[in-house]
Length: 82
Image 1 (cartoon, rainbow, N blue to C red):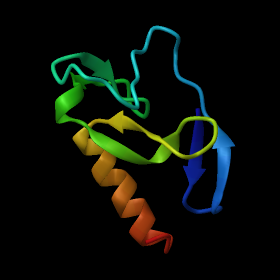
Image 2 (cartoon, one colour; image 1 turned 135 degrees about the vertical axis):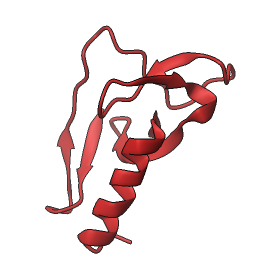
Image 3 (cartoon, one colour; image 1 turned 120 degrees about the horizontal axis):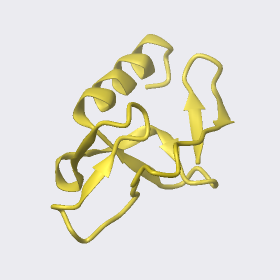
Image 4 (cartoon, rainbow, N blue to C red; image 1 turned 90 degrees about the vertical axis):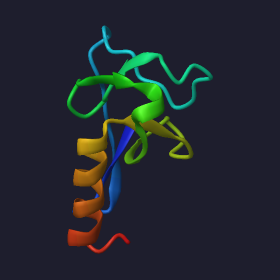
């Protein structure tokens, strides 16, 4: 995983605990996954595509919980990446 740093405008390495279940894509909308930001568990179908956490090439975003997605959008606006 890599994370887009809104303030620095660059990608940085990002890791999550090995116990987390994080997905970029999943057919099962009822799968319980972890938010890579905060670790909160949520149903995959209730998540949002991250604006900051991506697979290693930076093309596909991971699913994040609604609260962390809102924070990502606020950071994007605050640091001018919109």
